Image 1: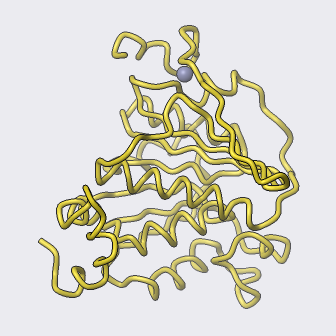
Image 2: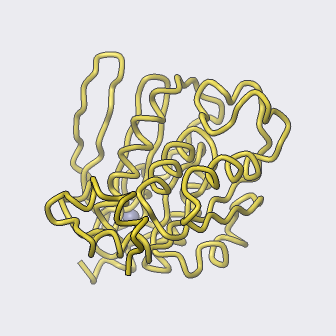
Length: 247
Ligand SMILES: [Zn+2]
């Protein structure tokens, strides 16, 4: 049940056709795992918490650096040197006190990923490197948890939604190619992509609209173009081939 305050707070989204109080209650019950408290993790967590997702867990192992501040908008000048999880928690608690926000300072690895995502309904990929994305992809497939991919480079970004056993996964998409670590980026790019990921999460939980599955959305900010690439499930995919029969 929604409280009087919640009905007022979420009034404008409850009005949306197909959303309603039922959709809002689904959001309230939902538990979303956000991997990363940086450029993508900032908008993803802000908009999911503003929308009333009941429980959010954010995992990050970094400290705030000056060079993060052009894009990681939950971290401010005063936060330099602090743990990112502490910096985001301080802001997010003020945004919406009715949401449970948990933060964990850990590096996500093969060894800890399963306990970290246990009991969570959705996983958002707000990482900055493909090896960790693959760790999350495998965990999502193994635990049958929908996985929301986003990535940025300069003025370009991409997003795709993965439903285990039904759609192409991240390994099907990238085929094991791992690019370099440090990449250029302007802050508006993760803002656009993070909002697309949050949109997908809200739609999935509420159960409306058409998901960004089996298609990679490519955003080109310099020419302001959105294009789509069809992505097929790879029958030889190292990560998801054992799930192929469920399609
Ligand atoms: Zn796959």
